[in-house]
Amino acid sequence: MQHKERRNEDNKIKKQTRFSKILSGFIMTTKMQHSNILKPIILLLFVCLSCKERKDNYANFTTDYEPVVSLKENIELVGNVQSFNFLNKDTLVVAASNPLGVYLYSTTSGMQLSRVGNYGGGPYEYKSPAIVKVHNNKIYVWDSQMLKLIVYNNKGLAVNEYTRFDQAIEDFVIYKNKICFYFSGGHSSLIGVFNLEDKQLLYGAIKASETHKLLSINACAKPMFLDNNNILFTSSNALEVKLLNLDNYEIATKGSIIDEKFKANSIKNAADIVNSNSNKLIDYLMNSSYVKRIFKTDDSIIVNADTGYFYLNDDKSLNTSKRITKFYILDHDLNLIGVSQSDYDLDNQNCLISLYNNTLYRIKINESSKTEFNFELSKIKFETNNEKLN
Picture: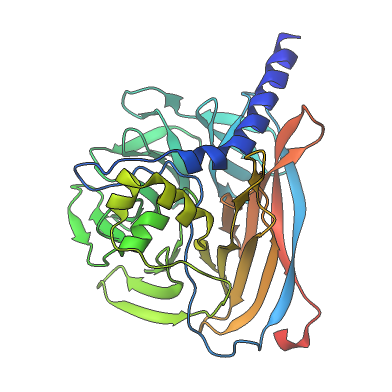
């Protein structure tokens, strides 16, 4: 009975959290730190897509979410999913908050198999597990509070940790003995490559524009993807897809996309707006587009973005009816194959997306009743009858 009452209370918190996240993000602001880094406290992130030919020669896709498994709470209740990745086809790694923890899940039964690591401030412990990645059959957990990276084996046992980083980040990838950060907020660089052992900066020449600094304080801004020895990435204010070689640090522009609905006006000083003009900040974020994610499969490059705008109803609740979530599907030469668009989902904002074996997966909230919530793993499928795909 106690467990059931706790679960019902936790489900209430889940629902309240989902509907308050964006509004709380719009009324909260943050100050620039001495390192000039903005804290990523605003939930939404907005980016700009620009400039490709063949504007009308693409297919209209529909996005289908095929349920895989419902995630159970047999070890610990999970109020919020922060990040997830696949350890293998049978096992999922999930970083959660409320309460904080990292868990292994079965992708067939949905059962929690074990807990990875423990909460705390000591060695191999985490206080805020924000990002989980899998590399060479090891689990990497980024602690956004203590700014450290903890490494666990495939059984969830700690094997290493890298501490004393001093950057707030949105995402990371591991390549050989290097870690590549996609910085958040007001950092002067867009991307930084560091030696994992001594934290030495190996590359940081990609500068962040002021517009990117403002837009990238949103939590869903993670447009970076590891492709062999290269990183595919965009800035948050212009979808110009670029490629960074992690061996020789040569950078190349692959191409861009035209979308007349994608709008993010340039600004001159992100720090001034954040620190002293909250009304302008709120207005800008509510009316700006942004890129969320980028992925590469054997056949395509997929870019996830939001366009349109938000506005407040008379009762001050957030109206999302003019906001659109899009997936741009491109070939490897950045020719646009098709676009899938759907209404913005306040509860499932497509932050939780991961690629495994050329298939995109997402974790979304499954509301079985007004008081019962759980999380569901689904495959993302793009479908069309348009012959232009061929």
